[in-house]
Amino acid sequence: MSYLEQPIITHVIPADSNELASHADIEFETDKVSEINTRLVHGKVHVAGVEVPFTIEQPKHVVDPVVMTYVNGYCASKPAYRNIRTAFAQNGKPSLTMQPVRAKLLIHPQYYVTPESVHTAAITAVLDAANDRLIDTTLCDVSGHSMGGFIATDLLLHSDIERFRTLTLVGSAGLDAHTLRTMLWRLPKFLTKELIPSLPDLYNQHPKSFLHNELRHIGVNPFFTVAEGLRAAQCDIRERVRYIGSLGVKTAALQFNKDEFFPEQGVRSRSQYLFNHYEVYEDPRANHLAPQRDPEGVAKAQIRIIKNLVEVSNVAA
Image (cartoon, rainbow, N blue to C red; front, side):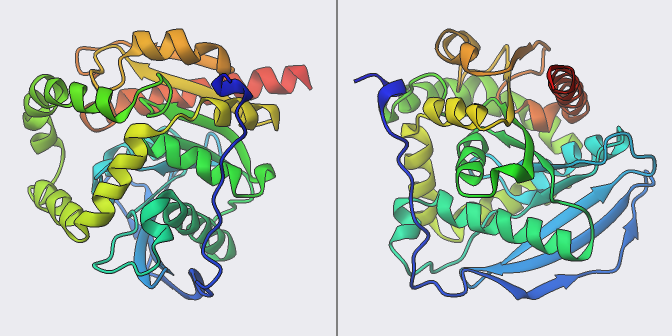
């Protein structure tokens, strides 16, 4: 049986988690105007007993009012995507980032079997909270980087599909038939050819506390961190992408020409045909960490891709 013939395997958020996403505990801080004159609003929701901070950044001059919801990659805290959130806002598109769920103790075993279920619940709670109090999230664009691509497909499969206009997978896991073994084989090359050479860029573009925040995020619950890694390493989202596209969501893949973790050639040969739009981002900095190293360029590429998807959709309609 080929993967295209296999049924989509879904999960159910634990039934005994009565208050998985508590909207009663929504908190918003006072609006702030950033140094670049975008509007920042910080909020919190509580999911599975865990506080989940999020930030919405709104442009001074709106070009596309549909909010971009950015789903983090593996082991990445909210500050890791701060610069690309700002880049979207600077180019006229409101954007949202959030802190992935982390707690010293997540009791239900389902959280460790399908950790993406907690992230899906958190993103849904954040979108609902923002829609109630701040910005229209009845229609959203979603982007997932690395493991975030896997989580983004899970979000769309367990939400009202009418809420989502486009899905853009950025250097995503699950598109080149990788396995745990192949990911372990790729890891040393990623560390030596991408992560270590990228450290100066990451240091210059992020606060000095960036590395400390990342290590603290990973270490809060190492068991959950390992569970996420195992799920991402073994995921195959190709059938999910095909199915989401069949429901009317416009899909795109943005791959990086120097990505050693999810090499572009393998993704293209196995998954290009699944998307409405497939593009390779070519730049000396375009490795797996391109959203952190070149946030302005990646954001502009995604804005252009989304504009093309929407225009083609409108012509077809």
